[in-house]
Length: 79
Image (cartoon, rainbow, N blue to C red; front, side):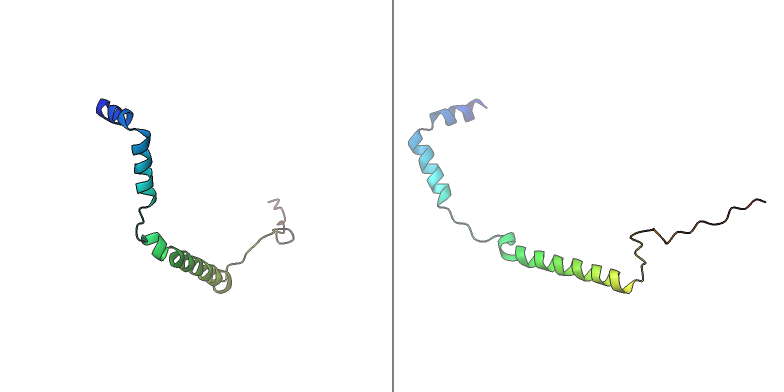
């Protein structure tokens, strides 16, 4: 910890500016997200939409959004 602190305190304003400009002008190549990020996002959207389209149209699930008028009480048995 002490060597790191002494090196940080020894840095002058000029050397700090040189380091920051060196890092600011360093251009790296495109990484995985730059190359394929939008394609993966679009593929996920298409996949999700296709699965939900299949589920909503082909599986025969009855979507009971409101039970009003669909539930009828049974007669009470007195036996």
